[in-house]
Length: 253
Image 1 (cartoon, rainbow, N blue to C red):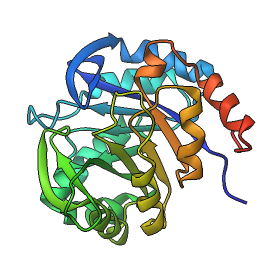
Image 2 (cartoon, rainbow, N blue to C red):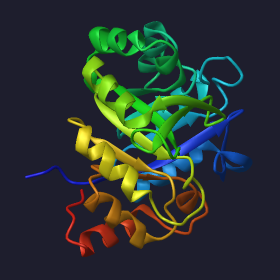
Image 3 (cartoon, rainbow, N blue to C red):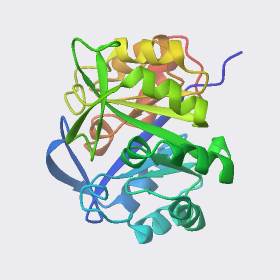
């Protein structure tokens, strides 16, 4: 029997505040990360994902103080990404309360980072964060981006996911740049492609707009569903999403 589907709110953080935009642009402030994390924990979130969306662009480390304060308020798994470049960065994040660490741009620049993190801490700590954009003419039709979606690469998204898993990634966080913030629904084709090549859990991200959008992502192959703006705005609660999933016959926690 497959594990219950996880519902994961995402806190995109810039300068210590939660932000959200559309297609990773025109970011607007949505609130205090610690307060929002506490709210989602109380609503029954299964995990939290905390992404410092400007750390790589600004060439700095993740805001450790915010991570520490968030971890002190919630008692569910916390994944933190943004600005992670070395195994020492991972050690420091785990030391301030993260349970898992997401890597993206630095791993694309130096794939050996994945091996190093997995060897030192175990695959269960390592989440490969993929910011994916449609690219007609490529093998899979999708490429990965870096620097918070700002820089397009020529790296095929599906081939990169397969390589990262072989190197030791324990989970894939697959975010569609094209769908991000649009509230038009998850990119189901992208989820299916990742499911076909992945031997590790797949988290679908980008595009959730209604409670009805989540079940199709799970049926397409996602083990977990992640959203941001629909939760931050109060449009949906964690309970709303779990109720919709359960009504569709999907096991939830």
